[in-house]
Image (cartoon, rainbow, N blue to C red; front, side, top):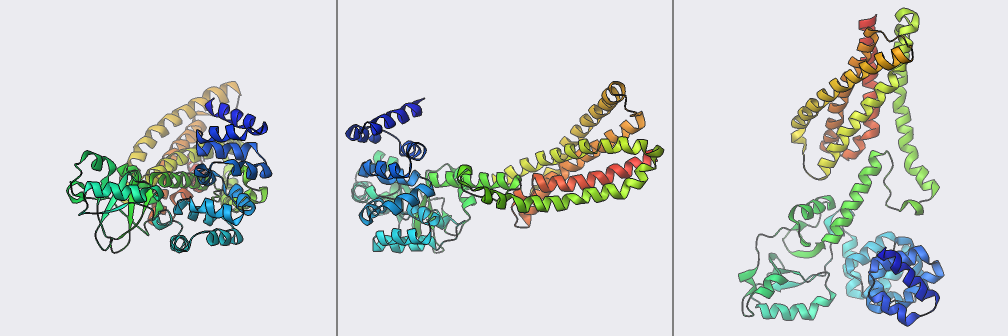
Length: 461
């Protein structure tokens, strides 16, 4: 409701050209809400005009919140002076994130607008791999010396803090810039002015290496609940920090990627409404083709058993058995997907490792056994009470027993396969999400059909 009122107020002031009042309202509005208003309510020309109305101290914060398409159109419309003003007021890690999304001609303009020292730092950050901690960090942090007093520390924070990503956590370094401790503003405020930093700093510091995977970085934030973590190089020198907002972005990206892979879609970080139909086609077609080809195995299995199934009571039993195949395959696929989704999530949260595979398989076996018995009994009752008595299909006790038994075995098998494959994928340095729903369903379908046909022929033949 509050967001709707803000949108209505901004639109009313903008349409009535009450720009002085508009600027006052904007100062009390969150940058993210302003960005949403600009993107959803204004066209391209109005976006540029509205952005130029933003107070200087707010413009760069709003610019960071825009999606890449809006940022690109604004940069193209900016004068060199306007672009420099925005770039100078942004944190370097945000500038690097924007550069990663821009075409070459826009990147060139951004780099030219940056100061020489900033340009050098930006180029250094761009050299780190995309999935590493170095690509996420910002070099804008407050560093203190161990022999400083608390009063000296506050003086330095006042002088340099305005351009830093965060001033709450300060990092203590030696003359070679090696990280030796951490001190918070709370520690400084509660200490006497003459107290030395080395007497109040924390030395057991959690740090991240520059080439550490960003997924591991997100897990460290989750584990230690810090607002920022220092990034060090091989020599132990601090080269930057990563703040919790960057870690949250990583968590969101990784979760989105896993969901897309589990749904057999090539990962894409663009919003759905801004993705072209051709791009959607390109992301989905390869997976569907692979799964279609792999699913032909189920057809081959049915064809290979067709003759023997047709021989059962002149084909009457065979037709009844084939009618239960969809139920069997769907139940197995769903059971496997449940296990794989649970294990993939546990792997992503670093709750389980490959060494836990036998514990996990035993746990899934126990749960699968109870589910198998339950579904088997319900299936037997359904075939006897509904299919036989209500719909008059000739499901005898023997046929119902075979179908229910095979369903129970399929459920049990699906649970074990579903939990084991993601762990094996992780061990082989593959994304565990790849071994989720689609592939597990295909594998389970093939195995369940072989078991089903074999048991049916052995018992009913």
